[in-house]
Length: 616
Image (tube, rainbow, N blue to C red):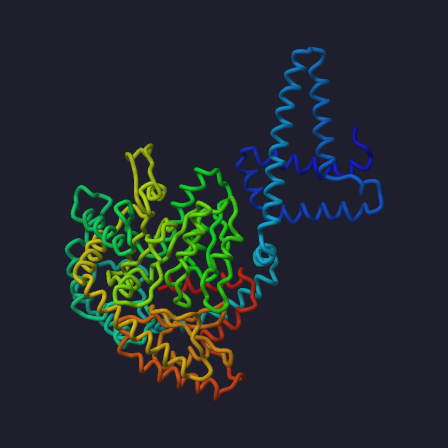
């Protein structure tokens, strides 16, 4: 029987039980009510628990506990059921057996929950717990506390025009939001687009844009356009209609695998870009390793500088991302540090060759040994370096091993639409064997539309891009890539040397011959330097944690290296001359204003920016 001290807990336990039963009942009206109040249930439960505890300090109820009441409630329920069974021993025996089974199941659930709680308490970092709490509080406040949501909306309204300015939207632009009653003449359409394209493409031709567009010669652009036109209506989903496209895709994969030191067992697929390649690789590792090892809470280990596509993949696939802080000097992922975070739930290590922010190459050989030792996957993100590093090695530059010649590497992502000089929207994801690639596929045999299977996320794909990618690779050839890489590396070396001689700024990371040059400053706001460079027509990439910026050297940038150094020197001089009290504008103002704000509100500002890109 329950004591007086236990009854204080009985009412909330009973209410919670009734609510739980109601949640299981499929009544549409009730579902609407539950959805309305669900966001408040966690806070309400914590408040009730605290109230009961605080109100009964020093009383007999203080010595009781919720767990104790639950056990007593189950015992009381068992006695009541047995009383209803009467004197039939056979029925009583069946009820007792079933009840023991129920208690065993509840015990197993309790053990699993306890294990998960201990695991989280031991393995989750203080920063992770802090972010979780702060994020939940912020989300609740933004959506449920009017003064806070009102203040955020005012801030968003203020940021809107500034973000619109960053997108360089013409206030006098003509907007077409409805289909015209009569179709426009072809010449009229082409004339409108040509007028904009001429101005917009001129920015790239100036050679002042970091990354973005990688080829520089018109003849290559003409080739891409002609090949695209040949297959502009094709769709690889219907392989029997366009068999040549299947061959093109297979040959793209084979040529890329060969560059990455892949043997005959290395396979892959083409995707829409680096982000999809990374998502597919992580999905394949989750499906392959998690299912075979009974992992229900998979984890991925990467460097804090890993590409945001990793976060996107983990968000989509329900994977916990463990970000290991990069080395404070080299900005690479330490193999020794990685070992500290490996658990029974680890699927793979994610490494970069090179990383997007600082352009440094992680120690893939060391990480490969770690992956082999713990029998986990190792993905190498070579989206930037895949068509640079192999040719740099052929040219005699000191390039560490980063591909399938490291036995622990299980997958790689290589962008053909960057330094492979293919049209935008193509990449390759490679796997050490077919079994891992199979884990990437989606197969559904019971669809009413027939048996369905796709290798990538997309169903229909533009076959013209595959044809153009194949044409790019075979038209340039090994000698052409070597020539292009040579000019990029020489430009990189000259830029690094020149930046090192500018007082007030410094190069970040150990510089190897790559295409990314990253710099920062301890004396001034580096974003203000970037603002000054923007005034001079440069489009650089602002980075954070720590504040810095980089330029990705393309063939368009190569002849502009000296101009870049001259402009950078003048920009640094101007910022120093203005002093720290000068008003911040552009990215300097944006990064400065959001630096101390929790993730939730900042994400809402990013949502505004994305909304503006989708607004006519």
